[in-house]
Image 1 (cartoon, rainbow, N blue to C red):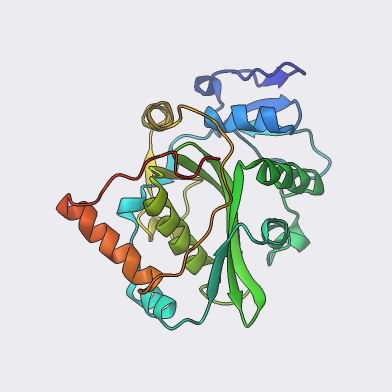
Image 2 (image 1 turned 45 degrees about the horizontal axis):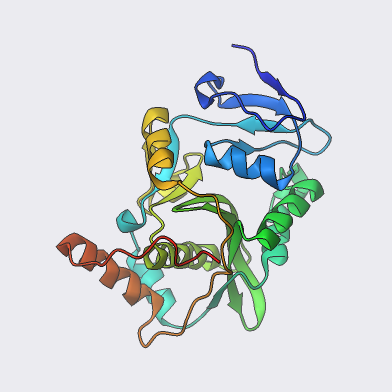
Length: 259
């Protein structure tokens, strides 16, 4: 099946035409309008420095439903010891730079090129990309970033400099998702690491159905925040899981993050 070459027009082929490895198209640009359109159809850019922009839509797709998140006992203990301070949308540029220079990527190359970093920083400025930061003694210890459209969060990358920092950031992302009615976290590629946290694979048809169900308006959002709570994040996540299992959890208005 041929790989489609994009032009200046804001058009993408159907993800159904993707190669077996997920490659769908080549070319185009990283302007916000194109990135938003791509993500809304389950397509994302992934390429190396010096190569043309490559657009992917792999299947099966690894996803994490927030209510299915598994919080390991050891990680829960870490989160309740206040080893880390966690924030959201306070250091987006630093987080994406941390992902780009994470261990191994500097030596072997990274897809988070300078061009990619600037494109996502611009998406963040416009209210479409978000970060979760994990701090230790005032220094950035780890974090993650991604794109949020309506009720879907498309995870892009995470990094850690201190053991468990990225895991704590992931747990806090789930906390934010449960608070704000985000229905699904897209993890893109299957890894054993994410499977341990409750992620699972969806077929292309099932993933596209989730997008159709949960993306109605691609509007900019306010910056995310993590308000202080009398109980720790680990307890909050567990309590929310119990409420969902019991059918007593209230449904958060999906516009609570909108401007």
